[in-house]
Image (tube, rainbow, N blue to C red; front, side, top):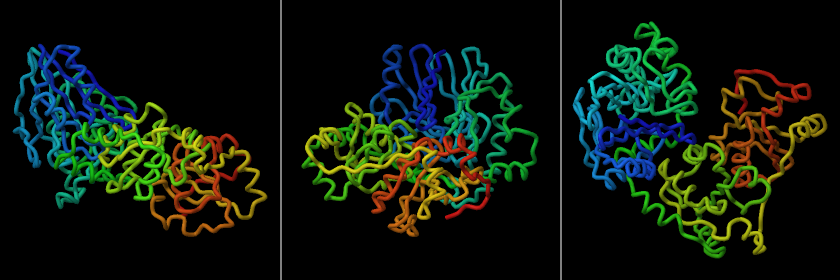
Length: 470
């Protein structure tokens, strides 16, 4: 028996490759399937099944492309409705993979079709359970994502989740391994732990949702404090349910090398310019009107939350990063990439084209300016919860997700000197690029963000406040 977790940090997503006697299965694959095909080839195995734990909302699954490439059967749990051929498993149905078996356990709660897959070894002993978004390490799946689509309340789904956990998962032996679909940083739960796998016994001891709670107490615990889900979640869930264009087709369109003139023509057609270079390089110079979302951060997640899905995208990338940029966009459902600037930003500069830039300032420089600049406005683009936990007294909070709204900066005037910061510097550069696109140019990016500000706390008035100033 062979099990390999394939973890993608940008999305905090875990897929799994399982194999026995040359027969393999993949659980919750990403849209780019090369890693699974390569692993099967290296191990001289045939992928027979693709198991999906549910309709994912935070990424586009690779089930369709992987099935086309391998002939494997796509398996979903009970209560699944799709627009493409799948095997809808019965509860407790068993699938044989070489000398091991996988049993379907229907565990509604995160979504109605959510199912876990219990792996039994060659002796029939329970070895591991692949829990999808039903059970995480230290947390459980949020019960609010499927409520609108199914006309069911968040509390109803939380009640189902309670029953699923107590009847299907907690009775398993303490030594059964737990392999979830996500780790820390995912928006599919409230507070996922840093580990990417655990055991049933460890989760019974440490996971707040598996402690002795009444059903009512459990419902309250898992529904309180849920942040709004990213805007792209419903779009991805729909794509996973209804089908999508093959990744090869998306790459063919996206890997279109554009001359400077062709690139400029695309901008006249209202294509979005997305610059995926390192975020710190972006501030030193960029094509005017570009949005910065650097590959060095949680790129796909922020692209999905900020960019429209119905507009064409053209790319400015580091040389050799064109394909990676397109694949990582495709992972969250983008398929309208129409090419990239062939000469890159350096070639754009060499050709004498217009450029723009963002002024970087250190935290201590901002501290000095606070005392002497009556027109200074500090914009904190962190989440509301981060802001409430500590912020510069003078700062207003406009979370990054809100900045695509042209009205978010409506109270800013030409005479204002705007200083923008986040926690560490990545989000503030994205924010600066978005604000520039709204025609506001008198802005400064605070290098190092709030982490650097805290190091100089004697120069700042930092307070905690549950109120959000918008």
